[in-house]
Amino acid sequence: MTLVLVALAGGAGCVVRFLAEYLVRSHNPTLRPWATVAANAVGCGIAGWVAYRLIGTADAHLRSVIVTGFCGGLTTFSSALAIPALLQRQHHWGFSLSLVLTTPLLCGALFVLGMSLAH
Image (cartoon, rainbow, N blue to C red; front, side, top):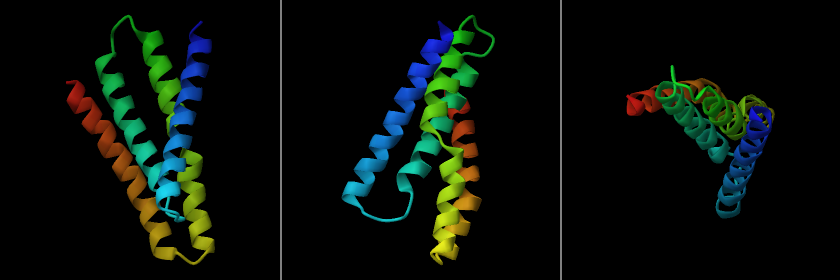
């Protein structure tokens, strides 16, 4: 049953990320991946909160559904690396480099923030 719930939650996370991308690009048509960065950061924040809040409890299945499923579907490491590579090919060197350097820092900071809020 946990496998089914993880799959459904992962699908929901993917849909949330897609809708965020769609809404951002419909209001701000740009190659800048604002929604991808936001989805990665928010997903890491949720994962940090859940990981701390549900650690050592009997809710290991719920933690798997939320962290592995929803947050796994919401966040995207492949796009976090593919988009800077595409921007670099279009000679947007500075923005590409800033994404590669700042996205992991932002995501790590939000994970820690999520843990702090759960504490």
